Amino acid sequence: MAFSQRALNSLPSPHGGARMGQPPLPLSSFLEACAVGLIAVGVATQLVLNQTMTRGATPSFLLPVVIIAVGAFLFLVAFVGCCGACKENYCLMITFAIFLSLIMLVEVAAAIAGYVFRDKVRSEFNKDFRQQMKNYPKANETASILDKMQKDFKCCGAANYTDWEKIPTMASRVPDSCCVNITNNCGVHFVVKDIHTEGCVEKIAAWLRKNVLVVAAAALGIAFVEILGIVLACCLVKSIRSGYEVM
Image (cartoon, rainbow, N blue to C red; front, side):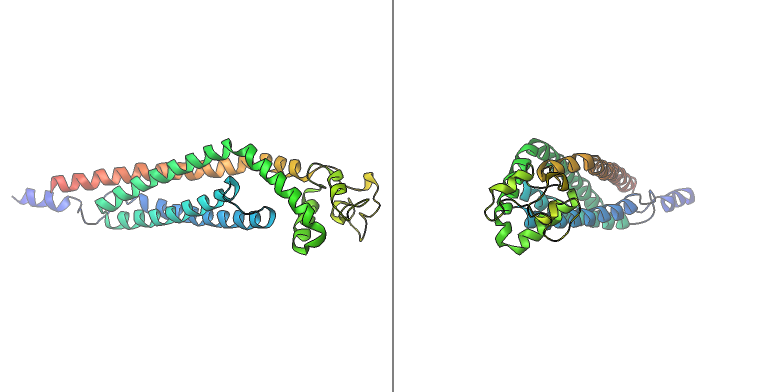
């Protein structure tokens, strides 16, 4: 009888304890950090799109909304996982594993949609860039945005510098931001060798292609942590269940 009592006392409690060292706990904290990062990226992307493109229910504007929504949902799910790990609650850990799996499916779907609509996004950006060029002479905010883009990417116009010839009041000149060495009125009666001749659409697209590996690596890192969280949550659920069955 004494042995049986000692055996019962040595069993992990189904209501708390350190059955598995609570491995999902640090993972939940890391997932919360990833969620905050996703929300920040989504907000930043939305702000950039608001400044450079015409608003509408298009893939470009839906993308940051999806990123923010996934980030917010991931934060809530990570919080549930943290609570479930601390209390070793069976229902909370099951909920954590299921919703984390759903988040992974949404992320995969978003990645596939981004790949499928990549040409449409580029076409849309090209159209909106040209529209912003038309507004350049009469809108100071638009002018500052385009000037910054042309200066940062060392480009001029949408396809090339000749696009500015089609803009009223811009005949025989380009914005000063097109100049290699920017000075006041350097774009008036310019010499081709003194300005950037490549278009901004292709320059920005090339920059995105160059940096897509960084984004892909970050996405794979988050996906790995999510998979690890699902596996460890399932292990903890199994351990909790075993504890109840023994009891």
